[in-house]
Image (cartoon, each protein chain N blue to C red):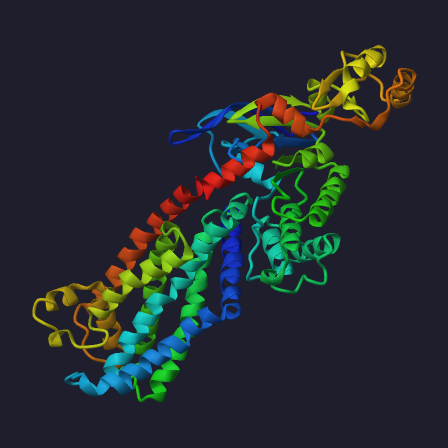
Length: 257
Length: 324
């Protein structure tokens, strides 16, 4: 019981630490707010006119995709933070304390959930301002938001793994973008998969990110989801099941040098 | 019956691939004392500290800290130690206060107690005014003080300081030494690694000299110094050609045969008191004029040179050149 209580309290202490960092590093704050907003404006007003989304207004098509994308990148704080802790020797300090060791990872990823909520609010406000409408039920909208947060949490573990694997915060940055950018763009997030070249379509259709975006889009817009919600949920949980232990393993390895 | 040692290791081995960092290290640190682990870069000091603070498991051998095994009872060990590392391990994006409070919470001191303790430590390390500023605005010396404060949050009975003053200017070093001495006077056991001989000499009750993963000498600073000979008179003559005459004239006051080295007459003496006056008298009687006379005490630099055949500074520079 005591172990569990300490585990929770250590996680909360370290989540708070992770969050305190954000307002103090203006570049992170920009990454969370200005960057996604610019993305929305660019896609809606610059590319939107050229992209055909049969059956949807482009802004309705776009917002779920861009929200899922920015939430996936939210875990970035975890990658940067862990890489930074390793580089600066803070990891040694934490490991010499009688705290729950895993709290360094659970604290970071929990901190990400809070930044993701904040980011989600920003994105939804911007979306509503540029003409996005929830066309589904309230229940569906809430389910969609919950799914977004779960997806964000799963990607935090991917980023934790990246942060613990990269040799420096800069390298973590580079890995993160190199992996996530193609994944998010070769998907249904910004354009309909049907508009892609035929060789690319099967890849985009089977991209887990496509399932996630389709699921959130269906829930936000109240359109039939088919199996997308279940597949998205399955993929999200699979990412957590794979990357949480993988991160824990890296964490033990990387600090045992 | 004497108290159990605060730190005790036996036959510690650790290799990184082909590199043997520790090749069988036995140490025993008496409770309430300051123990200096002295050696050049790459000697294995940091590896030893990382094993003792549970950051690293030894390949072979065992170690107990505050009575607990560092592998089997790692968590118990962590409750009884504080660690201040080579580079100040504090969070730059938090304030000094937030750093200490966080460490207190992670030692499970509770919120209120953690805050009180943080304020108390900021005050005693002269950081009260800077306590609410972000650490990234701190100077190097302030960061080290905060790092040391963080190691003391839970009043650990055993404190590990891994090169606490490396890279600090002389004023900050002396400030940190004073802080460490104050702690020791309160009964904390300190294990300190350093490349600085003056630091070990000033702070440590006992010193182990470590080189290439082995302890090559151990004792009090005085014992180590006496291994390279005791005090010596060093006399410069006005007329350098009369050195041999001076050696003969001074033989009767010397504890060992006087000798000439680089034009200086060196006279080993057993007793410091009165020897300068006696030497001056003898040389005066022989009609040999003195340019300068001084008593020289061997330093730990001499000890290291004698033990390893290498000077510490030179070794360090080489290691740094290699790591670049």
